[in-house]
Length: 135
Ligand code: CO
Image (cartoon, rainbow, N blue to C red; front, side, top):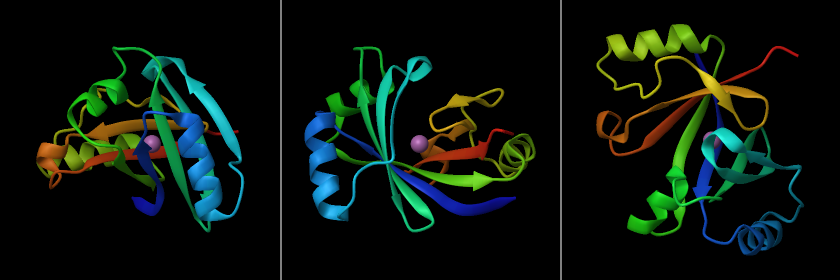
């Protein structure tokens, strides 16, 4: 089932500038920076209570974030919900008519298995499901 709002993903052009901005805004340093090769993105994570802010910058012209920022301004890119069984949630959402973009969960940032739900089927918002990998 869907648990908490795990993070908000923010698409940014300049990761260093955005990191400095969010460090000032939140009054704390990020807890993690990570390159995700499969998505061609650099990420920076801030903990905010039980949730997180994920900054995302594309590292290649093919990156989904680079393409997104060619059409849209910087800002909220996706909502990510933590789930306890990502395969079961993907099946449940498909049954409910949502367009799940991945056939199977894939490796995401921050030690998670992830999948995405198309914004066209989700009220205009890209939705990520994520499940912590067993440690
Ligand atoms: Co995310």
